[in-house]
Image (cartoon, rainbow, N blue to C red; front, side, top):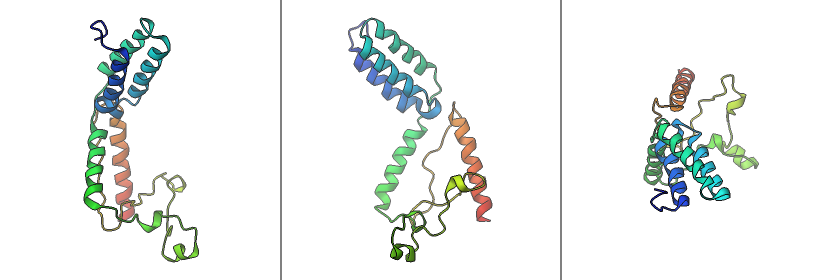
Length: 162
């Protein structure tokens, strides 16, 4: 593309989009690599900056791929349009006044870092809305660790519900 006369900054922009859309969190360093290539090119120009673009291309081409975040993001948007603007659950709302405390704002709030497992399992969905899962990680790259972590949290949540 560069030898064909394409603007290197256009290529850099496309690499950033590719890193977010097609690689995603399967390789959380991909977007950093793409942004760094863009930054290096802007600082050095051609021909030196083209090497940074080439490095980003290789990194992205060989990175694990996942569009799970992209799909989850779209699913969350659809849910927001479907459910409108439902009120958040009272337990996560700040209660700076006595009236708000009397209405149950902040009642029984559990701060995740203060729990034994670092996970409260609290439900943050609005009243009248079932818990939904929007992000469904793959087993590709770093998402395999996220998958395991989410399974662990589901098990902790199930034990707390019992």
